[in-house]
Amino acid sequence: MVEEYGDPKSAQLARGGGPFLLKDSPDLVEQIFKRMGYLDDYRNQLKDEAVETFLRGERNHRELQRLGVVIGEADSVLDKLSKIRLACLSSSCGGRWQLPPSDRNVREHLVARGLLNRESSLDETSQAMEASVKSSGSVPMKSYHGLVAQYQDVFFGRRQDPSRRR
Image (tube, rainbow, N blue to C red):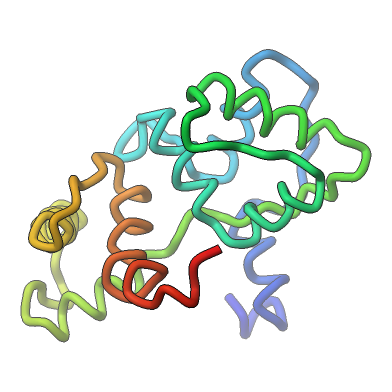
């Protein structure tokens, strides 16, 4: 996509379906999450994990901070959705949110560790990620994107390198 669109930002915009407008509604964030791929009818059905995965995105975290939105770990899912909705409705919000994490580097890592082969299905990838996350002492997330984000945190992210923590 980078070759086709010129640079990583343009490619990510294209991968996200490009800019879009939605009318305000009580389920605005869920609609946004569906458009962006955080929620779907297959592997990413859990709203609470979609919210957590969205909040793990460094760009999303920075944008929320810039907008003065403070989301605590103790906040309920409904509180978090409400705060994200207010951020999205803010005239200061540019709407450039980060997409769910790609599994490309996770799959490569699992192949390198001998836990997966290049032709493995998403189910096999999910099982390998889940087993790896469990072996680290963490409780694996159930959604695919959540599991990808969690694997990244555990094996080459903030938990691996404390200096990368927010």
